Image (cartoon, rainbow, N blue to C red; front, side):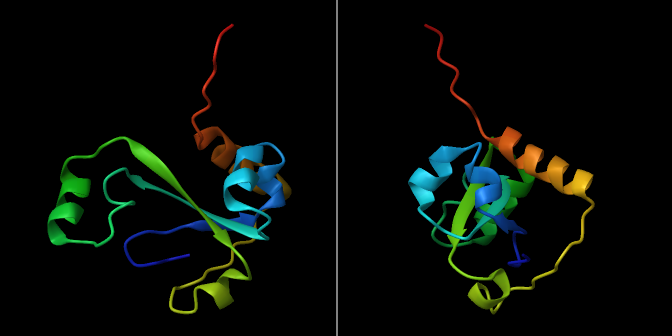
Length: 111
């Protein structure tokens, strides 16, 4: 998905929710999830400004993961965004899923 300022990856939800059940708790029973990575000030901003964009480029902060429930095929849901379909090998797809899973902070509490 190309939204202009950010690019996201859309995958079937079940591929990731089986190992990260918190996503299903937060996003519900959705067929797809879009993931993106970005600046922790830029992503939650209600409005994109030049100052915010420059700050994100010049003074990077800790990255965040943007996860959005997609209730239908991405090209239908995001009709005004550019959608590119990728064909990955089974190994490449598995590596992509692992990368997304490993991008999440896991609070490891010790007893």
